[in-house]
Image (tube, rainbow, N blue to C red):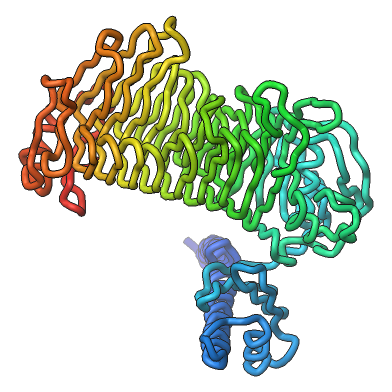
Length: 589
């Protein structure tokens, strides 16, 4: 090869090398840019680290201010003025704003727009970012004022949005369009639509409103002489207007028929007071259904991933999440105290569909003195035909007549599965059933009960009904004033069919595990593998077979007893497996 050929060859190799080098450099540059700018990139990580540092510094400021404020108080109490004074000393005046909602303080850092909720003992219980909604009162727009795209969920960013949403479902009141008040008179049920709660809202915090002093929504709370400022409307008088409440003038039901996704967020200090409601429901002879939602569609309504607190008062059909009727309620928590005449529940007053993975920690009070249409329950006051309650927990106290830790009254067929009661009530799981088939499975009670640890009274409405009660794979450890498992098997029915299988009672009770059977001729009772603690309770006198007494040491911390329960359980029926619990008693895996 001559010199020129060699040069051309070298030139070709050089160009190829250069091209490869450029490609490699571009790849490396892309990787570098991605490393710097991606969601997990250096810039974002640096910003996140800076934000976390700022949050830590703000928390330290809050801690120092609360300690000093409480130290300066003669009784060690935390008060708003003293807390603000100490914050001003640390950060300079105007850098923070303190507000008191009655139960806790909210401290906002003006420059960062972050807030910290502090309880009366000075503990930080919540933190977050103050959001300024650019289109309050219009759920068809996001927080930046942009239109929600077709098929995407509507968004709730502030109290104004929640009020507008309620007015839209109820077909009455004000919404805001481009910042201007628009009166509506047509209901929207939101069928097949989704509404999402985008952040925590507190009715007593001005930072949950875009403008807590606005008056353009008019009179909502039934008091036209209180200047109609929005926060005042929401926290006095009748308070928030329940979503889907029956129209007081036309009597028309305005059901919410869509899906409400709480996104694991909270609605706090919700206040509804319909104690003096003069609109009487024609069917139940009580006031209108109330709750955050008043009424839904039993075939369509879904409410999920929501936690609420506050206070509700009404005449009947009252639930923390919904007054009556929903297809599905799941992953919801009620901390509100609720009072009503009848059909009162922590989650629902009356419901036909499914309630899954829900909890009640609020106090539930029923003021009705006699059985009418339903009682009070930690989860639901009254469950309709084919109702399903699954994986629910009650810790709240229930006060009044006919109260069940999970269900007050089951007048129709229902299933209660994987539920726990720890609250004080009449009966641990369900207090009363009539004209129905009730299945209680994989449930247990730890609360103190007046009637029974698991089930109260099995009654009938007339002599033509057959009532069936099945209690499977369950137990009671709560102290009861009467029975350990069932209080009364009644006589007003054609037959009373009772099946109890793989159940034990080790709760202290003054009576037998079955207190009374009013009609031996009508009652058909089958008992298999039922055990009671003979140190605390008695065998049901009228029943000999299927019940065995054991001492405490034969039940507690005893692998042999756990093995007996597991050998008798029916896996094909989803009976849960038994293990020894932390307290030594058999519980579920």
